Every structure is written in C-alpha cells, then in structure tokens.
Length: 231
Image (cartoon, rainbow, N blue to C red; front, side):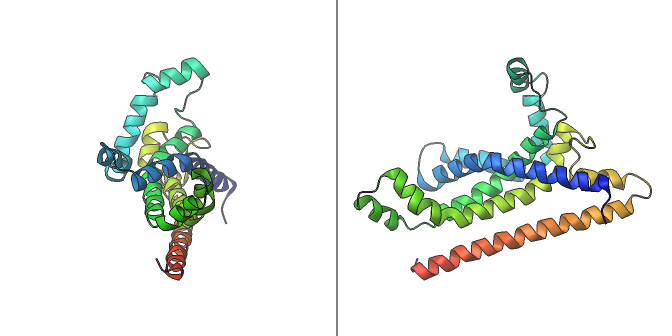
C-alpha cells in the first residue's frame, strides 16, 4: 500500500501529465494537420524542430526552458512584469516541461492518423455542398479521432515519466514539482528507501504499460476501420 506522501506524489504526477496533454492537444493537432496536409518552404525545418526534443538530451531541453523562462530570461521577465507569474519551481513549470517532451509523440501519432484519412470522402462532402468546417467536423475529425486519442494516451504516459527537463527547469521540490520519476530518484539517494522505490517503480510500470496497451488498441481499431472501408 502507498503512504499518504506517495499518494500525493501520484496525484501530482497525474495532474502534471493531465494538464500537459490537454494544453498541448490543440497545438499538436494543428502542427500535425499542417505537416500532413500542406507543402511549403520550411516544412522540413518545422518537422525537425517539433521532433527535436526526441533526440536532444532532456537536460538540454530543461536548460533552454531555464534560459527562456527563468527570472532573467525574456519570456520569464515578461510573465513576471505583466502577470506577476513565474513557472520556476512550480508544478505548472513541470507541466510545461512535460508538454514539450510529449509534443513530438503526440504530433507523430496524430499526423499518421490524418495522413490515413481518405481524401475522397472529404471531396465528396465538398461536392455535395458541405463547407470546410462542416467537412472537418463531420468527416475529417471523426476519422482522425482514434489517432488523436492514441496521441493523448502516449503523451500522458510520456509526461508522467518525464525526468531530465523537469529537474533541470523546476528542480525537485516535494509537494510542488516532485513527480514519480523525481521521487524515485530521491528515494534512491536515501538509505532504506528501497521499499518506496519498489512501490513507485511498479506503479510507474503499470501506468506506462496500461497507456501503451490502450494506445495500441486505438491504433488497431483505426486499421480495422480502414480495412472495412476498403482503404
């Protein structure tokens, strides 16, 4: 059984992961749509920038966030002067770091789903008089929805497992920024912390494995539906 402290760590991790994917969803979908549907100068560069967090050391991502959003960074000074807010050493900063690390996975899953949409169905709807928004909301979005849901699940799993960018940007503060991976790291440094490490590690494995299974089921559902339609 988890202690009250450990339940607090789990709750914070779920809050950070949930906020990260919900905030990232519209941005990820817009980027995925642009990359899947349009050809323009700089498209390769945009694709590379979006996927950069996948190949950069997470500590570098956290360092860049620190430079931009720290108290002396351009964005950090702007937030402080206009809104009196700061992301440093707060759970919202942890959510931002998790969102940036989850963005490439979400964009990739959504882009594959969008690219798999039969454009003939959209063309038929436009021929019958449907507008762009009506075609998008009644045909394109429902067909892409399994991929969007899979992206949310993958992004959530990546968010709750984020370590390097989080500890670099917002440190490891119990009750504020200490998510599951940071708590496991802290427990490893304490004599006799093996039991806590085991409990939290098993919970992390269960959450990640569950997310992967759900994502795989959604992807398989998409493939089945396309085969039924004869794509």
